[in-house]
Length: 299
Image 1 (tube, one colour):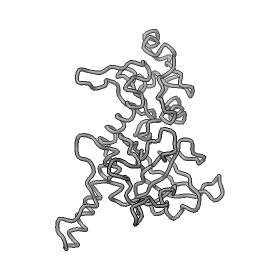
Image 2 (cartoon, helix red, strand yellow; image 1 turned 135 degrees about the vertical axis):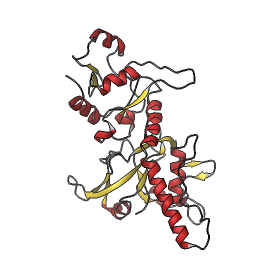
Image 3 (cartoon, rainbow, N blue to C red; image 1 turned 135 degrees about the horizontal axis):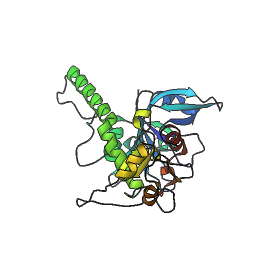
Image 4 (tube, one colour; image 1 turned 60 degrees about the vertical axis):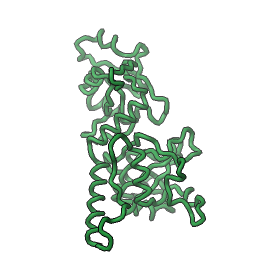
């Protein structure tokens, strides 16, 4: 197994759905196969409009031939492993490249930087992930740190194994993922409720809106912005109970089971449509909206 970097652009010609699958040509098959069972970082190249740099992590579950396109393959992403970075990480900062493995012996950027799929060292993976998920508290344990017991190979191996388990536990922690998901969703919606358009900030400077999954995590809903909505407490309660939903055209639906329809209509945007994120890639995906209408909404 090995860490990897997958290049993805919102305007890609490939059939990529970062939280679910990554399509690639046969020339990258061996590289992608080496990532099976391990984590990869998604990267938007600097040429992409409003590039986010390194912007998310995910775990590769398996690789299969693309049944619809000869010579193409699909990396299937492990359900619920995808996570947007709370802080997009640039290709380089004041200290140089964030992916140090791209430098050649002369200290210049090598041709590997052009590869759509490439391996990445544990040190580079941790550096990017720590920055991407950074908050006030310490984050990932470093697995590239030297052993505290030089020359004792068994102790070093056990220590590294423990760090590896800690890293995986951190990246899969529901508490951590909910916290990061809230940050990226509220940023996409400017901390405004998508249903009411209200932006309420409490006395401690904390936004009162919540980050709601359109398709819940327990129903295999991914932690991706396009599966999220920023909602006030009341709107969140109504959405989770199927009293409101959203069409593929982003119109707000009100269930006939609502006791006070007039009050509900007074609550929602006057346009009758949800507030939309600026980035098209952050818009609620019709796939998730359809799931909510078919499985939650009370017609």
